[in-house]
Length: 218
Image 1 (cartoon, helix red, strand yellow):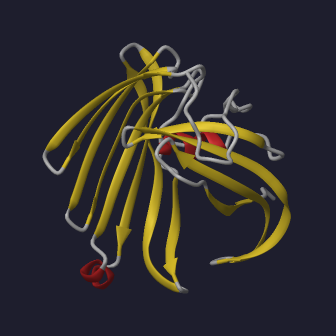
Image 2: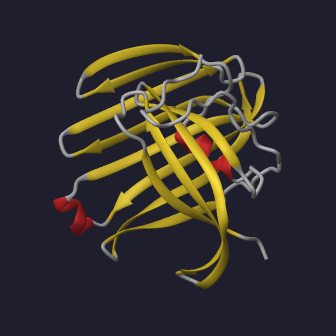
């Protein structure tokens, strides 16, 4: 029921849940610039695509697209897209997909969530080979796109864990607010909350660590 984290990382015994259920505006797009050594190489877009009814349930559809610049793609052929269908009532995913390619590797995965996203069936095709996995968890889990939008609905003083499922594996993710900071952005300096993140899948030998910033509303 609980995924095994990498060595030195605690289990996620109780996953965080969003505290706000505000409806996002249809068509809203958030764009991130991807940089390597200070050089812009591409963008990642997140977009609220549609709101409607899926299998008798009110839902939102989210999409994400990773694009790299034409010249850079000659040396680093990476492409990716993902989407999820999420219930408006409790913000849990019903369906998700991710498709990406890195060099000669091609991956296409579809995930079906049931029982308030505590159970799932994932079907993945990688370089022409298919695999299927069924999992049951002690709490609701998310795909990567749903997790992005769930984070926006968490309290600012967040501290806890979530489990994200993708590529036939569960990732344990620990998040904690470290403080507030004024950072430089493409539109000038902005106030932001700074968070530490530690994560790893069931197949990771050691967890990875990082930092991200979330802008503070005026």
